[in-house]
Image (tube, rainbow, N blue to C red; front, side):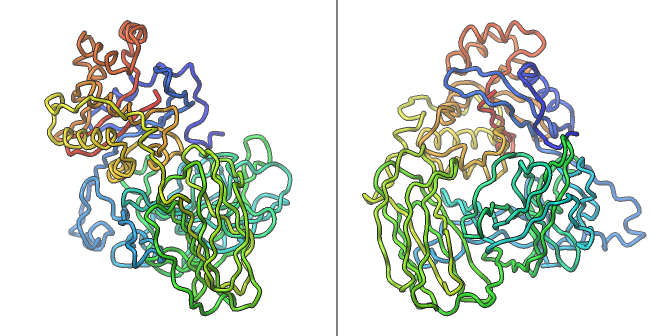
Length: 585
């Protein structure tokens, strides 16, 4: 059974990469969908990855027949409140960094679906995301919640703790994800993927959760205490029951409208080889509004008098837990990069019960290693402690609450560099010191050239926030399975050298038209990818001079009359949309 969208490809398939992408791009209106191909390593400093996801923007032709005669104005297409332009998503969101007066409040969430209609009116009834389609569990959008039942004998799962947000806020772009704790009672078989969260409204399923099969084994503890053995279950911001652009490719950009929902944790144990079943929790009420998704406060918490902690321009991580209203606000916002050396944790807590305290841990997300730990007294005073931070490779550290007494009304903690500065990430940027400059004359499109120039400038400046901005606004296929733009362009860099690679591609080689739609062709760098320059001595020499291939590699690829160049590449269309970047061919 094939349940993963990026499995089963091995190194023998490496040679297929360039030809399959180019062939798809050259088909009028064509697209590459759900195609996952591994590329060979072409540079010693670039780490081999098993698979690279290849995606291109999809086009859909919609034909309305007899619409006027039968009331076409009542169709969902014509009921929308405003036009949806090509490349525009109704659910796309980017929010500026919070200002000093609002730093403690939740970062803005995506705008709700136009008109604020109930979620059941926005979803595509009967739709099933690709990663669930082959499981044979009957999961589909619009199904009755009553039919969402456990099929894994001996297994059970329960929602635990409050729903909370992780917010990456770099370069003025806010990227939230949502989570909650879950406890799992295990039966026969194994659970090798983390749980996810299914949303429903008025008895109808309106979101089927995250593709957990794309990250097997990545089960971690939740950030908010949720009981012994609890693991983190992820909930989507954009609904998987509101696909956009095409039926054949899973693209989800539209958020659920504000309102009252029920959520259920769902886990997929493998009860036998290749056979997955599901276990489903009891429903929990959640309120969705412009500040995020909130669990019910219930009898916990109460009034609080403490003021929000003042913003620190160098802060790394800020955690806020607020139970002063009917709905809990819980979020962790990360706004800078960690550094080796001492860090300063400033925290405060207020509880309606005397003597309460909140134990915490400072955690490295990728390894779950605990850097430091302590406890904050809930006496409404600010408490400052020094934490020695080891070399964590540029990761932003998490603040994890080990236990939160019911009386806690408000907790807040800010982690910042102890020396008042966030280090010098540019010192570890692979483009530092490069003298290459972008030449617009080497691009056949002015629109593509404008974006290319901006990418080169950001890479040369080692400006992570700007690169994340450029990569998420379109959005861009980064060809790195499971890694968001914030991780791809994180500083300090790892061995991949993305910054240097971007400059080498766009400033070191020329671009050429290669596929795309009529009136909006795609420009690809290096130009040797295009058929027009496949036998060009100058084009092949460019990739060598730019450091993308060694001379030996270039000679070998050029001699391959079937596939030609299969190395690193980047594509931008004539409208200026950054289509894809393939850093690990």
